[in-house]
Length: 309
Image 1 (cartoon, rainbow, N blue to C red):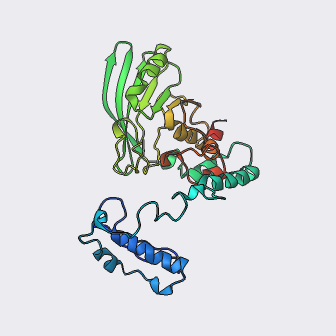
Image 2: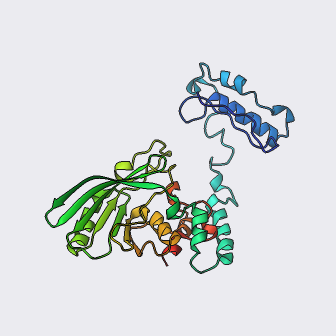
Image 3: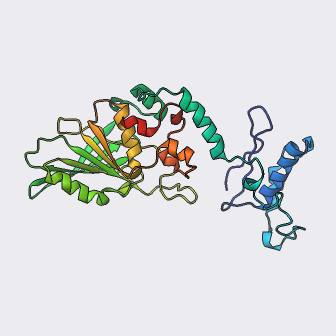
């Protein structure tokens, strides 16, 4: 049974929540609670609060919405002519409001690439020396001209980031870290092209991709499994004595850009392949956007594409 919290507020009655066991939807208890709430704030009926949550919950016992006579049928119960507030004169969507805010933010934001400290603070990124990680080599084998090493990078809290290192014998070039939202298997063709050029390749799965792509809390209707798990882990160090380049495919371009900007000199450069839209484009074009691709509050200081400049 879900926990119930009623009449929450920062010293006021203007915030509240009622919930009931079961799947997503409106039951009689939540409908009744909402009516009480609206009576208080739309009709100034002070007797409507506090809400008796237990009494509201009892309304759900034996209740079947399909068998209830509501007194009105559609479209008579609409409170707008067509049942859509978006068709009312003067309607402004959340995107319209965001565009207003974006205009103000862009006018007051410094045009230069943000400082590394700003990126770390806004995105909650720690310096690499502050992150505890242990590399555990699972296997190492020779395959033709390649040394193939399978490694698991274990981070604090038990998170394992699986990676495969493919190193041509005698390679002297700086390695390339390959990451993509479809997992390591989808990066084979790109990895083979780099290896043919004598470049060592490290292919890793980040949170929400490949072997660690399935997470518990998938948001309603989300295309990506990591909607509510928006913390990205990534590797910044290589064993080849040179700063690696990163090739990031799909939505992995965003954490790669942050890694590049947060620790200058650790990554030699970032190449993006089919990256997501910039945050500015998302607002300006009213694009539905995954939570995992956003950094809360970052657009006040930078767009993620600014980090690659």
